Length: 445
Image (tube, rainbow, N blue to C red; front, side):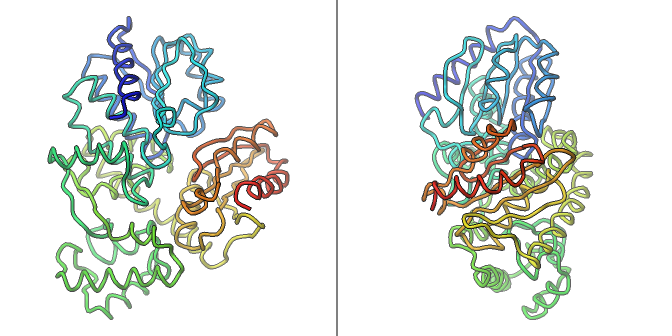
């Protein structure tokens, strides 16, 4: 492991052991990575005898953090967030540990804050480490018994799409540990959620197969051509049938102009575990749906092993995917609006808009421009931006762009180079659209 990171984890564990409280507050993000990270920390700290209170936040910039501040917690752990919120939380009367992988602000040590950020340890936070992988290693150092939580680390890695381009760096060490310890099994195939092949293809949104995802007529026509029974389960197909199906699905994506790096993610090494009820990417999708579908408590309950919650989450995930499919099909039909250096579209719900932008940028458009999703909500404009690795190699930094524009209009923004978001006053919408074009011109023009 990275020696600098190792020392920080050991210092964080010493903070836990030297704490004079039996209560620890955990604040985490609301997506699959954040919920997985919070679940790892909750279980690990509970096993140590702490009373743990967890909150999963979508937008921690104002009201959420103010509520936490008023609680006067003695000890707080922020996971999958915190580095971008230091200007606010530095004034908390609390000891604070941050386990984050988003782009940090200017780093000045603060006595009551121990910031463990992958980027500050020469680890790429957008592709080599996530909130859950950091939380897992911290928890395994706290107590080796917590190594049984490693499938949740893979849930976060998968949820943050850090398998694109191959699992690398810090994450790769964790995946290798998971396989070597036999806590997960590895196999090659496509993502499959559903009891039948028809349902699995219908509800697949990432990858999004144009003409197949959300289209039962298209699915039945495809399966008829391949002589596959729609009611079969994917596992019951012969190897020849699987090869035919996989080849056809790849052909669909190639015809839409899908890039090789994304094509490589469709049929790839996959991981399965008992803790995640099977294939980990499918499990991660369920947790992400709960978080972004305003059922955060349900997603958290699933991660900590509530079987009844898991059964409930399957139905919720199906309904949530239908909402995604409705918007993706609309975007597939109507396209996006064009600016010189980016594309943008308007979405109906800010919790789903980032998911839709992330899928659409990979499967509905070419790789020449980032894609921006805008949601008008009351007096605010909620922005989600997504790019690709080709653009980041050219200089794209959406996290910096979102933060820079938001600061100019008294808003909030930040994130990764490849994926970021912002919230700004609604009356600054046109300013944002023009300013973003100018910033992206300087980055990638």
